[in-house]
Each structure stands twice: as C-alpha cells, then as structure tokens.
Image (cartoon, rainbow, N blue to C red):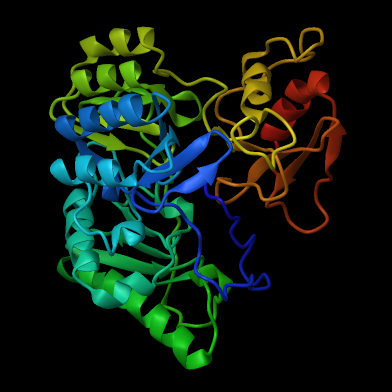
Length: 417
C-alpha cells in the first residue's frame, strides 16, 4: 500500500507537495514495521512466466516469502533486509523487469487485462508507452503516483480515474481523458501513445508556468483545457473470475497476497504470459479451463464471492500507524466467521456484486479504490462504516464493534442511491 494518501476528491485543496513523493520503488525501498518494502512496476500488469518465477524467488530468498498484487497491477515484496536493494535490482535487471533505473517509479500503467475482444491491443499500447516514458528525460518529474490507464473500450480500467486515460474506440479511434474530467479528446489510435505522453508533459509544463506542484491531475482539474466531447458512458465490466468467454482464466487473491509457492503454481498454470489486474488478480491468456481446479485448490479465488471488490490496507502488524489488524478483521467479516475474542459475527456476510469495500487502519486510507465505495475505518474501539461518493447530505457514518461489522458492511454494500 502507498505510504502517503492521495487527494480525496476533484477540487479538493491541493495537499502540500513541496517535497517529492516518498512512493517506494524497486530501488528506493520503503521502511515498514515488518522490514523494507519494494514495489516493482509492471506496465500493463504484463509478466512472462520466467519473470513471475524470478519474483517468487526474490520474495522467498530476500523477503518474507509473499508477493502482493497492488491496486495498479504491480507487485510488492515485503520483509526485505534494508541493504538488499542492490541484489534485488540485479535480479530484476536479469529478467527485464528494470529497464531504467532513473524512470522505474514512473512506469505506472494499467491496462484492460481481458482476452483480445476489445477495440484495440492495449498490450501494445502499454509496451509502447513504457518505452516512450523511459526514453523521455522530462518524465522523471512525474510523481511516482501518476497513473496512465489504457482501456480496450470495456470501461474496466477507465473507471479507475487515472491521471491520463486512453479509451479505445471503433474504426481506429481513441479517446483521451485527463484526470476525472467529464470530457474527452478524440485521437487516432496510432497516435494514442504519443497523445498520452504529450498530456503528461503538458501537465508538468503547466504546473511550472502556474507556479504550483501537484502529483495528480485531479488535484488541479482546471490546469489543462477540457476536451471537446462528453465522456461516454461505458459498460465498466471487469473480466469475470473463472474461465473467460474469450479464452483463458481469471483468478483472484485475498488482498492480493500469495505465498511464493502459490505464485509458482500461478506461473505454472500460465501459457507463457500473466496479466496482473488492478483488482489484485491475474488473467492467464490461453490457459485451459482444466487448470482452474488446481488453482482453486492452491487458494486462488475462481468464482464470485463476497471478496469481490474487497480490499484493505496493510494494517497491524506491518504498519505502526494502524489501529487494528484490519486484514484479519476484514477476512472474518467477509467470511462470516468469528470476531477477535468474541462470538460469531451477527448477520449475513457481504454478498458478491455490491459496492467495493475498503478497510483502513488509520485516516490515511492507503490503497483505497476510486469512486463510490464502503469505507471501513478503524477507530481503536471498533470501526466507522460509511458509504463514500454519495450526493451531499446522503448517508451517515455508523460506529460499530467488530461483532457488528459484518452485517453493517453487508447492508452498506447494497446501497444504490
């Protein structure tokens, strides 16, 4: 999870950005209570089997033996020794996961991960944008949090409200969206990568001209001119878990966490390539449906459950700022199991298909998703549950105990107005 929170909403007061962001990378490790943390950027979430196995080896031999898929389809390694950066960097370079030491933190690119049924090959866009970013000296001025999203027209990653979004359209067209703008700019699909890069550069140049400093376009929504067309309504559907209609498999992980052995099982099931998703899962293009049972046995999520759309920050014991072991409490609420030191959780567990829900151990709310969601915040005595993103005056926060949380969260996830 990121060590700093982001601005909460469009038009919110711009946070103090006088200093560079402290977002971790593969070379700049972040010190946490459970050891150093490395974040390896994977543009488009793309990994070969060889690269995936190299990450499993690094987690087991240098860290705590686990890998974590982030909300941007990147991978984090935790429990690292503070002086292991050199060895980790060497391992990543050897398998092509560290093409640029100077640009490694700005390679933040998510892409639609589903089978090739969209309106454009967003994997080609991701590779092209990554090469262009690494070849642009000015790009090091971007924050380590600045995000590009490449959407195949399904609306799945367009819903993430990235800083720069490309949306594939019919007949060789694309739409360019800046931040959370309600407008878009049409571009030719063969110019889409260049247009995305130009938008990021214009963002930096406009900041310098205005004498301001921001990490995200949403922090300064009027800095760049709006597009001439309204943002279209998109389906926004994610690939379903299980066997995919267009071929391949899609599996999920609880909180995006996998032990090294699980991760190797995932790599073994892939047909040469894995696509990590911003929903903390993986798409395995071309993998036969017969491999799904083995992945389920290894602990992967292969069907819709209450865990769909559920996330949590690191919490205790990995983060000293947290007021609770939020992942343990969230797991009990989602599974309908017993609470810590108490009786069985009352009420029904949350159901699949409701609002996203995010558990946070403190007010920073690290790793929370964009858009409307159920916000579950640790208070030290229990949790405060609220639905974020409702119209003004709608909804109120509810203080609950651990024993009450499951039922209250389940009801909140069913909120429709």
